[in-house]
Image (cartoon, rainbow, N blue to C red; front, side, top):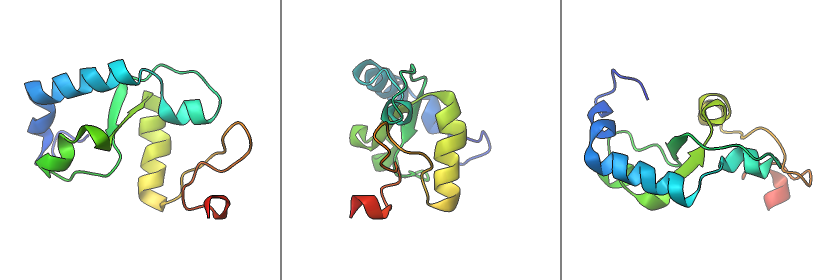
Length: 103
């Protein structure tokens, strides 16, 4: 979340703080770490589909995931750059939804 983005102000609203709190209460563990068989507290609420200022996507509770900061800053950012989600779950199945294992 870059402070220079035109939608940065959305992160400073009461509605966002309330939505973020509810998300972390409902899903307190990092979704990506959990898929890897690790138990890690989530500290970041991430938008699955980038909102790019679209308030309906920004405030859509079904568009949110709970992540730890390392997964948000590295894994999720890599996925957004490359289109490939790195890693495998505990059973060896790739996390990337585009993998041939998910067809």
